[in-house]
Image (cartoon, rainbow, N blue to C red; front, side):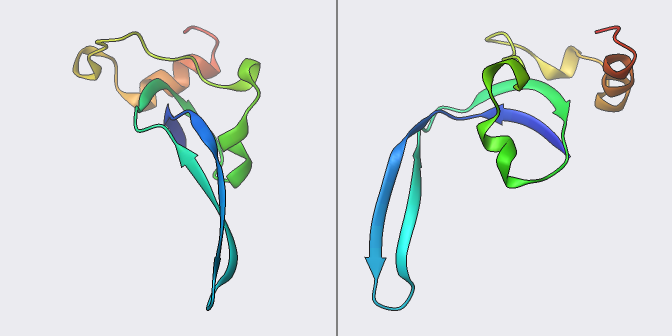
Length: 82
């Protein structure tokens, strides 16, 4: 129930299979960019959030082991404290 990372979409490819028919593949960058953990209901459209609605990237080298627990961070975010 959280967005934790993102990957850049590089493009789309279409293939046709004799059994499955036409298929569309999303080609993504192998680099995984960690984001601020953001509660979000599971549905496919979250993959394409507009930039203002998407979670902020975590700073490079961020160490999650020194951060506060996720459930506490969620509560603080809901209260507008972080």
